[in-house]
Image 1 (cartoon, rainbow, N blue to C red):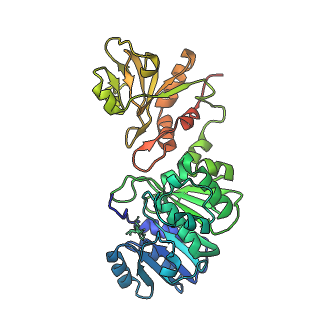
Image 2 (image 1 turned 60 degrees about the vertical axis):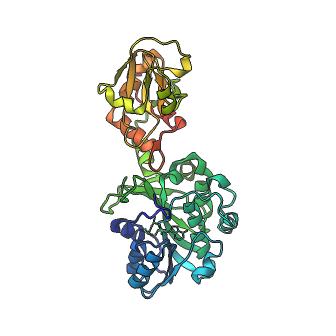
Image 3 (image 1 turned 30 degrees about the horizontal axis):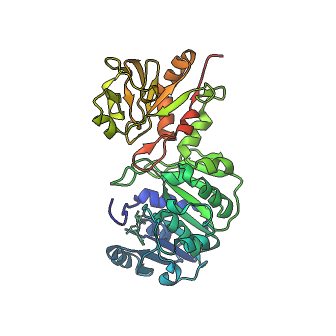
Length: 391
Ligand SMILES: C[S@@+](CC[C@H](N)C(=O)[O-])C[C@H]1O[C@@H](n2cnc3c(N)ncnc32)[C@H](O)[C@@H]1O
């Protein structure tokens, strides 16, 4: 990743982001981190009489933006600065519409960050060590907007799905009228595997009774919507997860109901490599194409380290391996911390195996994982994996 996290919005996504905003009219539109101008170009086409304000930290982008948008105010500045409104030549609370695809970087030691979050009423819902540049950009956009002004911002998957951001999601819903989320197609941005979503907010807009979620195709078309309650939005805001949850058979039980024990391995892959013992890592799934894992011999390791016959193994973390499933048929492999060992009573094993290794089960796990590049399937999430069992 380069120092300014420069990944550019495809044209279809820029147009989608702007056309799905509610604002019919806008006098003032801002785009901080304007990059190649895809979002601002779509905004200019929709709100033709608006005054445009753009900023970027990269002088090449500012020069290009000045050429492309001669009528706009285009400034080279650091949008993470507490004095952003003045530097941009705007009052706080002046803009009607903000569009943004911010950089996704850590921002823990940023000077003035608490003041920025406080000014956007987001200071009490995020721990200082979890603050990232996209959160600061959201706060800066909210500062620039008038009450009721609208922000559409492209965010990384973690903000939509990770439990660390549950309170932030709740605050965005309750305080800033988060009313819609669109999930963009995977691997949509050239040069990154990141899964991303567009959040739609209304500054100080109050709580929405439902939040509408949809997916988008690479052409910018929308899938059918799913409406969720604010409580569910606090948990997660990704369309693919909620669409699957809605489609899950209502008579299904889940792994938790079946008393499944889920454990991740105790050792990293590197630590396992150093041990001269047989171990099982995510790279080993493909060595057993029929999913039946057979290891030689018998080694006397603590029970917690090893998987044994009857245990089911699934990846916990990975970029492209999350669909795999395996079951141990012999041996006692030590499993790494990138793998889950799932243990269920013998009478449920077949049903659990069938469900986890089915196409729907694999898709459920892929969609339930969160993260930007290497995606992680949380243990609590996996315990909710639905299984149809004979009555
Ligand atoms: C993910 S790119 C998106 C660019 C463009 N908005 C788009 O949608 O294609 C993020 C942009 O933010 C700019 N940027 C990164 N850090 C910045 C900062 N601290 N202040 C202002 N701009 C910044 C980068 O130069 C880059 O153009």
